[in-house]
Length: 115
Image (spheres, rainbow, N blue to C red):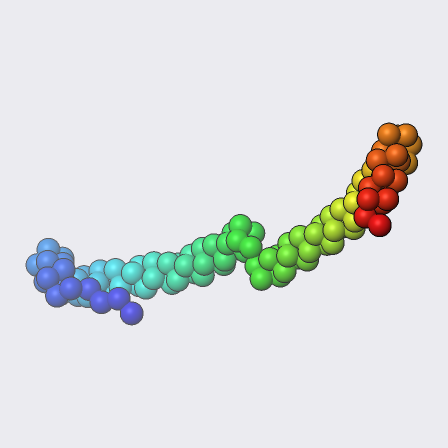
């Protein structure tokens, strides 16, 4: 509870008299108490609002886990696509080699030389 400094009480007593000073000090203390209670209420409200804002702005562990899972899914998809591309490249190379007459003759001569 808030207390009023002695100097303030003495000033009131000097200006208003003893009885009026007591009443004035009592009113001042009640006003201070009311302000303290309102400040505590505002603190609770501001704290809750700040907590909500931080939750909206900051990534949680769950958010990070979801992103990691999405990254892993994309990696797996890319690995599959790379395998398909490799097969297509090999098929294309084989087709070019087999369709080119000079290449076939070169391969035949190479095989003969290796024997």
